[in-house]
Length: 340
Image (cartoon, rainbow, N blue to C red; front, side):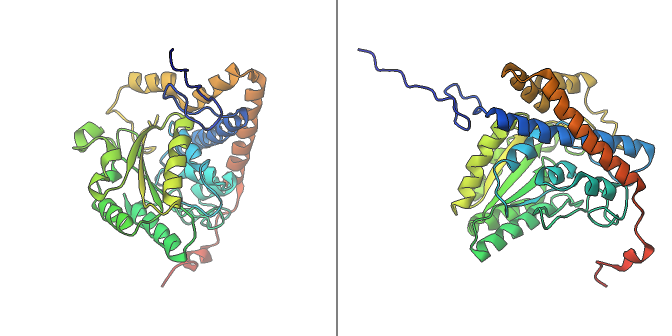
């Protein structure tokens, strides 16, 4: 007599038998769609304002990578910390920072999160446990490790998420941080957002080991490669990593295989890759379209999805209007919040 087949559960949050990501509930899909759309529309507007000259300095857009931070944010609880590099607007919005304050900082206005003095790469929110936005490549990895040390020292069960890119993964301070974190079993998830090109050089030309999930092997840190274009896969891997850290087992590495549609920054024409390559990723793997298609298949109407997009566009347009009309900071602000 043949053994009975095992039933395959399809409840939200549980792995399916075919190895595909766990399914989301409709509510989770709708939240993921809205959160990713907010980042996408915000970044598109930021790109427009930069082109108009309303935003100066550096501006690195997150378009295409939205599923990474949205999926990871779904794994956290209040008090967990986030720190990242200079491609940071999406992380701020995912953490709950107000779009008006973020956009106003980009335009150098008084209502910005750093009172208009920091710009794109220097925004913080203690209330939302977001610790930057850092312009020095790889610097946030050491700082994120320090946040995790503070959690361990205080004997709480909070977890620090330290985001960095495939280019920063070759920095020496990253490996010093790995060593310290494993020695002291610090609760930090290192999230490598591998968008394939760093500042403009393919990972195959810049990295001897292109499987970034293995970068912690010599330190006994577990790692996992993740489809960073599928928000469900990101959340599933994030749940595992965060639980590992919260249980006192030390750090965890997640390599998010993702893709940025724009250049490294607004000044980068991205001539190191073909237009066809970018369009193929957009067509086949766009993180927002994947969620949108699943919702349509679940009988959510096209009109409902358009309403979500319209709501998000209203938020972003209001943020852009505020950021262009809010007063600039008083010159006396040059001397505040500065150690002399």
